[in-house]
Each structure stands twice: as C-alpha cells, then as structure tokens.
Amino acid sequence: MESQWAMSSKLDLSTIVSRIGSGYPSPFDEPCRKRERKALGDAAGLTQFGVNLLRLPPGAWSSQRHWHTAEDEFVYVLAGEVVLVSNEGEQLLREGDCAGFKAGDADGHHLQNRSQHDVLLLEIGGRSQTDAVTYPDIDLRWTAKADRYTHRDGTPYPLREQ
Image 1 (cartoon, rainbow, N blue to C red):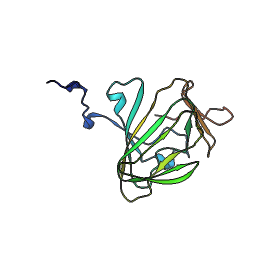
Image 2: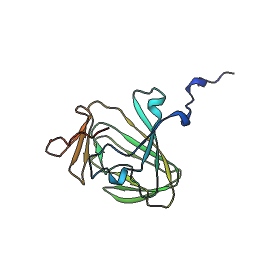
Image 3: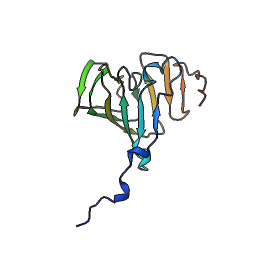
Image 4: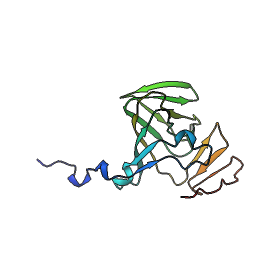
C-alpha cells in the first residue's frame, strides 16, 4: 500500500538556510540577536500558513512582546524549557508543552530562554496580507501592507542595511 505522502515532500533541514537575529530596529533587536529560525513552511512551498523551526540559545528571546490583528499563532516546545511572558504573567513551558494566540486578542506575548541550554520550538502562524503587529511595551508597530516598522504615531524607522 502506498503512502498518501509523496517522498518529495520530505524536507532536508541541512539545506534550509537559517536566519539569525531579527529585523527590529535598534535597540529592540538586542534580545533577539541570537535567535535562529529555519522557515520550514517556505521550504515546503506553503502559502496559507508559516512554520518555523526556532532555536533560542540561552538568554535569547523569540521576539519583543507582541500581538497580531489578523494572524493566529501557535508554538510547540520540541526540546528544553522557555518562559512564556504574556499579559497574564509568566508561565514555564517545557518539552511537549504548547501555547496558542488568537488573532485580534491584545495579549502581548513572547518567549524567553532563561535556561542554560538551547530551546527548540515550532512556530506556526498565518500569512495575512492585512496583519498589523502591536508591541505594547515599546514604541514599535509593523504592518503587512507597508512591510516595515514604524513608531506608534506612524513615523517609519529608518530601513536597516542588509
């Protein structure tokens, strides 16, 4: 009996380029500079949702605390332990734990690796062309339409050199 999954669908993780750091303007990028993402969804050709393999070394954050207007988010801890910081406070997530964030719910959240070991997570989220992201703790916003960071008043941050 043949499998319903085509063998060509298997991804070779060793061929997927890692993105290290963040596109946040300075100094907001500081706690995320060592995070490492592999865009598994892009590598698989997915168009309706994204999947990232995220590695957080000790001390690294997944992002600044944020929430999305038009995208759901889901994280699953594959290895290690990480602190989920949200409006509700802090919760420890260990291997096998997961958390979800509904689009439009103004629950600012992010993950911090406060341990002495790497954390490995799966991040799954939407690809909305109408999404906007609010960062409640800092003077930062992002919109899919403009595809750039702005201050809360709409003034753009300078574009970063690549």
